[in-house]
Image (tube, rainbow, N blue to C red):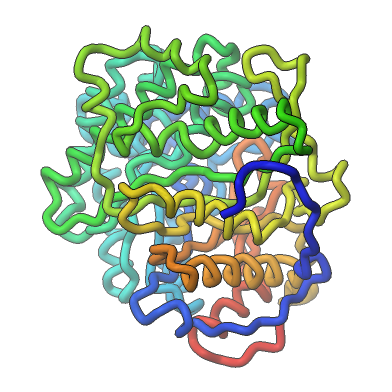
Length: 470
């Protein structure tokens, strides 16, 4: 892995919507897991059905201007009622692993206390259908949809959330652990702390740097404690956590830019993995994090540790940063991809397969990481429905190039054991509403009609060993 330093623009064949595919499924190994990932609030709908309580996104979506076009997830993809149809799609595409998250407020409407058995029954039906179709279920316990009742009690700022979360995890493992062996504790905790409690761009919409450190610490404690609950209650569990990771480049060789890149890397890539590995928070390059000590209690350094079986890496783009005096505390600003003449997705995210290769290499250097799963990777592009065909060549090229980078890292010795495409269905993409489409399957949100895109067909051909014209 190259060190964080001067940024160099690279060529990206995916910009032209194609890639010279030089690998096959078999090149990744017979035991490599191939899956597709989803999240409860983004697809389920039925937000007030069968006893489900409100979550923070239900409340956030009601606030004017928070979600593009005023969208909400009350119906979303109607997966709650259409899960059998959608799991059949997973099977038809050739994926053998299905990652989904559990809605905390569907299991415990008040977040803590009384169980909603209709919610438990839904996930039992979903898990049983996965197994019936020879699909291995992968459960994410927290994917951003905190029960609103807990947010009213302080949410992730309240240390009692460690108790609330542990109780929730125990309920889930007792209910599903006889059939589910693959568990992810948290999904992208940095996004929860940064977007949800600092910038206010995501639910619950809190703003202020003073929220950041307590939320980070409580998330990190829950990350480890959730792992311990699973280890204690599920035999032969394969336990991980999913971290958003972006390879960080300095804009130039100027020492100030290089230091800015190291601070960005500490936040984006090191903040949650290093406490779990027993390395503590990355205060070596970002001294502001020393202030987290005021939220720590005796014994917390040990409680932050957990020996995960795997770490889920979620990579969508690389980041270029430079020093800035206009950003107190961080002293940095991102240099947008749109200003750097590099290929981007519809959301303006840089397309950089080398970034995937580099971030895998960066995490591979940690001695305490046993295995790596790429738990999310995908791209949003504009899709045009042409009859029953959606020729999304740029998305297909994106997947081909990023898979090539994963294989390159694996061939260089990285312990990468699986890849999950984001995502199965076009869905409620958080603050972007329904305007950003990431799915392998196109969803008409008015009719709920599903149409497999050419990228989905390419995956089907790739996974089934069929030569594809894409």
